[in-house]
Amino acid sequence: MDELVKKKIINAFSGLAIPKGKLCNEEYDYDNAHGGFTGTNWQEHDAAYLRKNADALCFFTPEAFRYYLPAFMMAELSNPETTDIIAEGIAFHLTDTPFSKERIATFNKEQLLAIIAFLECCASRYKDGIYDVAYKHAAEELSKAINPGNF
Image (tube, rainbow, N blue to C red; front, side, top):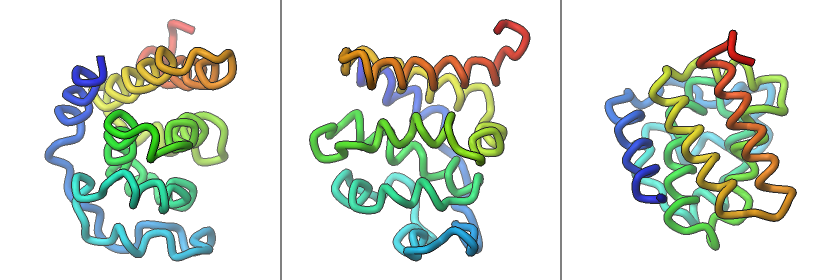
């Protein structure tokens, strides 16, 4: 399942242009979270780097969040032990922050479907009644963005 989800992510996010300018809102960029990402391709970052810099997901502009999200998802699928809390962070940042709707609005349908597949994969991997519920909730919220009348 992981390999199929990785293909969906690659297909959905390939071809995006690297964001220009500030990657984080200056008001919220407490730790200069964007520094190591500026001018880089999302495919350049390994799991250890992404785990160390997972707080960037908090501070990214919606455009930067959209662009670098596949790096975090791919790292989680490839190396879940190293990425640790990244999947939970992704679910949280897409559903439970003041910026969630603004972030979700930047994704096209194919990207949303890839993210949903990622979240469903995580839910099937972590059947503990806590994280699987959070992943399923996030997937449902993203589904609403695709088909708003179905919920």
